Length: 98
Image (tube, rainbow, N blue to C red; front, side, top):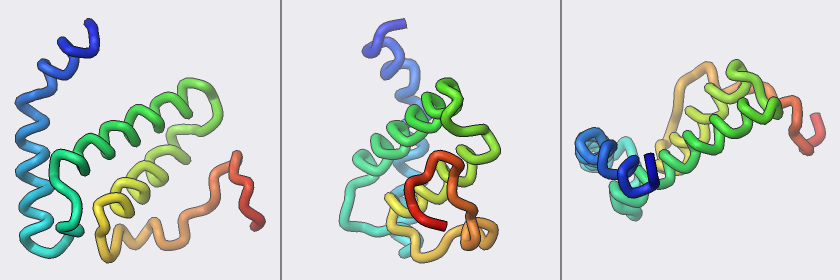
């Protein structure tokens, strides 16, 4: 399936996700400065990046899942995220000092 066909097949869920993001913005859970369409595109990019990291063996699914959730919430401008991410350990490939 080419890029256009894949995009078309995702259209029904994309619209639902855009509405969900918009509701989150309306309630103040997500930042309103970026459009729901842009936030959805960013989320899809992060999903693909997580998949590629796991497929390449640079992250495990155990590392990728919380990193993905944390990243999406940061991009969406959520004031707070799940409590379990507060102390999220650095991924094994991290360059940051521990």
